[in-house]
Image (tube, rainbow, N blue to C red; front, side, top):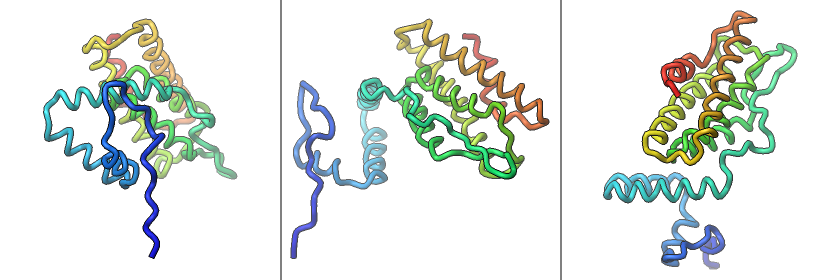
Length: 207
């Protein structure tokens, strides 16, 4: 009976100059199901010193910078208009943009995530949707993401991790203008502004 195929553990990530990953551990990482790997990482970070979690987020931020995670994917239209109703619904690309934004603000790079979220909000301009259903559920979720990204941005600022203050201010202003534009657009057709929490969080933050 042939042996099961094993994914080779090489050429996945660049090795750190100061050390290496044990070959068997590297093979484990390369072959585990993502949900199991996430469970292991959560347990590891929760049961060890805060220094480990800090090192983990430092490495995560370096990786996100390396892969330019704050750039929009090739298809940045995150909503599509359906016919014949003319109403909008989420496009498949929405998930990818949100994953990038969440990875950034989750790693403590809140300001880097704001432009991605602003692009999502801008894509609601000129669109209409039903009061219930897939679209409003997605917008409610995005509203929560905006709130969390702003909290991450506050912590990033308070932690003194802002290398370019002007760029950070520009990112915050971009999101603020996107939210204002969306509010104005929704008002024209009598809809309900879907980003109330995010807009309130932005208004209460004097930055």
